[in-house]
Length: 612
Image (cartoon, rainbow, N blue to C red):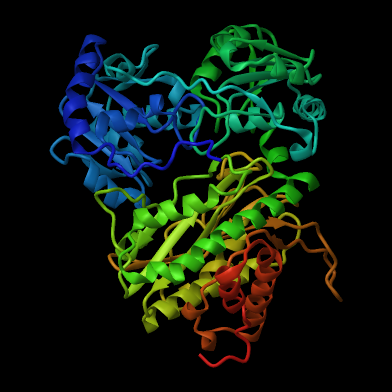
């Protein structure tokens, strides 16, 4: 029962888009008296996955990655990407039109300081930039003697013929049986937090926060059940939801009740202006500069605070954790069927990356509760697997021929939970090096899974546990070790993060995180092992002085034992692997039968005492 658009494998973007569209954009800039324009990969809601209408960076440059930016001047232009997208950037932009620059470090602001014309007027859309980011860009432009100029009409929108219409998916109530708390209780809690901050109200613009706060889900964002809109919630818990009227049904009106007013989204500006004389909190990490400008122009006192919904949303309640566990078991059964297929039919050398992704999709689609994927499946063989955020296309599609590794990163959206899991599988016989590197990644995965830590510990403090086995061999990986995951919301959420540059947010009970160390050998193969885990309540340690938190596993799918060199594992690590596979068998075996069940039993046999 599909409820989603199938994953597309056609090549989108590319150099021709830049060749076709850059002249159109520059013509609009000339009409507006601008010498340049800033193009972030953002929409008005700070979404990770953008609606088609908001893919302005792709339209202007041809680059389709999920993170990036561009600056277009009269006689030069640049596209900025991070290390995940360097290869993709080279392939998709025309080097005669754009230079490819590093998004990290000095980034866009540094490039403006070196390249913006003295006296130049560089336009920006205030709805697409956070105030903090805009401050950095302003300082960069000033160093060159240029100024940033706010525009009310985005010149890309003016130049873009046949720009897609805004998404208009209907809102649907998210039942308390999945949410675990009604929205009146949530609004009351958030109102109390607003009052404690000394504010009268908070402006909420993050779609996931809207969805959680009002127990609503939508379909405006692909792969995430999110509604686009905004809200103002007051310290007494009453609120106004600004959303397109066509998205609202009588059922939703009844669900929201009398304490939530509903107004059209285009009245959000008027709602902000009604805050004259009030103290209003807004999050500079999620709300746009336009929100801050509008409040300040209305003589409201703006309190810069984190979105008051962000932390409560991240700390899953008992109902949400039970739902996540159930979703992972049913998702695990589909994944086990896929892993069996990879170990049998897909070893022929005739299967390709697209066929494999479609096979996994067809198996998940047999789950009645499936509502969508949680992201487009990463299906990478050999050299493509060495690209951590690879997206297979007809142009890049490789056959799974014997002699290398296949990496698959995928997930599903279910009403009771969101899944995200990565497994690496050998096609043919793995080399000794592949087995060594896989085992080092596994050691890091186990170290994080077994971690115990006191209250106040951040993800950044734990990240080294997953990297140390690789560090000792002079190896590393370029992405974070763990991200937060929503409850039938976005597959990536904060404020928690496990990474070298992790957030300052302490890990709290109920937070769901990924555990996904990896290793990538450029042009050869990639390895990643990813489970979802959640933070447990503090518990005493025998003979210890401090109660410690830890992680509980959610994901159940075999880790390919032929890639494990048990000589590199400690007894504790061997015990963890055997216990984990016993858990996989316990949870998933009742949901499969026949050859798949026989394969699963063998895949979950203990490695302790075995001879490699």
